[in-house]
Amino acid sequence: MTEPTGPDHPTRDAGFGVYVHWPFCAAKCPYCDFNSHVRHAPVDEGRFLDAFRAEIAHVAARTPGRTVSSVFLGGGTPSLMQPATVAGLLDAIGGAWTVTPDVEITLEANPTSVEAERFRGYRAAGVNRVSLGVQAMDDAALKQLGRLHSAAEAMAAVRVAAAHFERYSFDLIYARPDQGPAAWRAELEGAIARAAEHLSLYQLTIEPGTPFYGLAAAGKLVPPDDDAARALYDVTQEVCDRAGLPAYEISNHARPGAESRHNLLYWRYGEYAGIGPGAHGRLVEAAGRIGTVTERAPEAWLARVEGQGHGIVETETLAASDQGDEFLMMGLRLREGIDPARYAALKGRALDPRRIDGLVAEGLIARHAGGRIAATPAGAPVLNALVAALAA
Image 1 (spheres, rainbow, N blue to C red):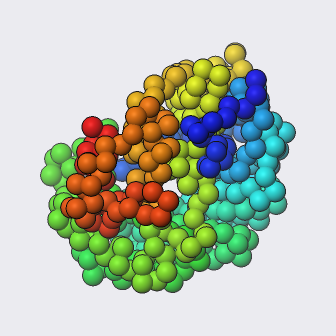
Image 2 (cartoon, rainbow, N blue to C red; image 1 turned 60 degrees about the horizontal axis):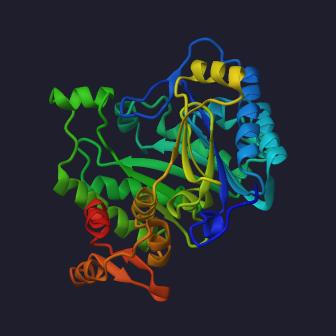
């Protein structure tokens, strides 16, 4: 099969990436609803690596002719893997597809001192960017969030990352209970002083099924209300803009040119393989654009791969309407916005110019060079409403 072409081909301007999910964590954070699992017995990394290799080979056979521009090792806690396991994964990807000379290879890491010592090994394996889950800059907040590291350990890990990687990022969670604008401003300014090029800044969300959800339902955890959260969001934009790290996506800030290429691939509606337990993918095959989902439970995924060569349990051919809606929802998160012509090619119909005009008049959407449209600073906090209005 030749590689699909045409105006709706997702690698046209966004490339092809590989996401690998390592599902294990040392502890489950009380706010987390990701597919992560705690195992008290040692994980058989060799067996899992063999399964990853098999699933990579299976997806590669479905996507011939692709060139990998980014790899993201997420989780879970990928920094619990031995560097040799990471090297094996990257060797498998390099053997399955062509890889660009400047490929971006990111590994998510928790900033404990033990894991930071592995950074040298990850760099030797081929990782060239790390993303650290710092989450907060003071010990009381870290304890509240259920993190295992201290603020001092986190900053030590940042220093080690800076010594081994030209590119690194770290995450912070804001809109935490009892967090006011002045305290968040000071914390964020301190983080920027230690961040070379990129920060991911997420508002705390209370997800069903998490311990935080139960605490909030019982009135034992009270996050900021909508107005207070909006004030914290506004502080985030102001402080980061002034420091030269503007938002290129609603929750991600970077110096120009330092954006995460892998994340841009998602938001530009690119094509990516999802490898590992619970991983999602978006591929283009002869039948069209498809979504894939693998078995979530690590041991069940492992057994499925060993039995049939892959762990994919759902494969859906996406209708044109779904493609257009996904493209709109993802692309409007970006400051650069979207190309309406690409939306029309995916959806099969154009956006309604009267709806765009109305949102422009309200100051929620702006028109940019080349016909692109983007959410304005006033529109970004109400993105879901904008997407619903445009897609109707």
